[in-house]
Image (cartoon, rainbow, N blue to C red; front, side, top):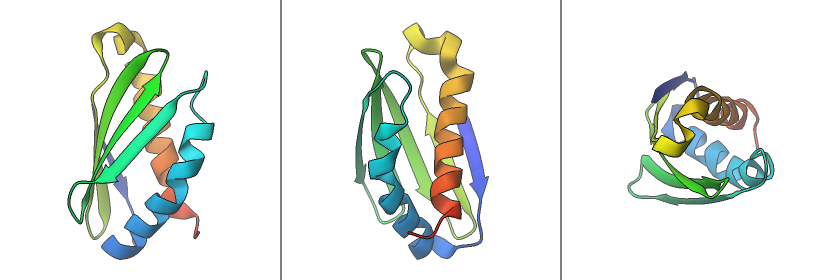
Length: 100
């Protein structure tokens, strides 16, 4: 599932805010879970969110005025695809909206 999050921060500030918010993301995973994240390139963040025994790959591409995301929900969690994607989108929006 694809998500788009507009912002007016520029690439460097958007990345800084995402980095600052990543430690908090894990605390808000329903039912507990983990987040493993690393910058594959200067503008591409690869994450794996593990919850309910399932791994959910997420990729964020940070652009000058938009963060594009892809959430690959595994088959076992397809019924939760909407809420999972909403969680990722809402979390990214919060990270981008709060200066760290």
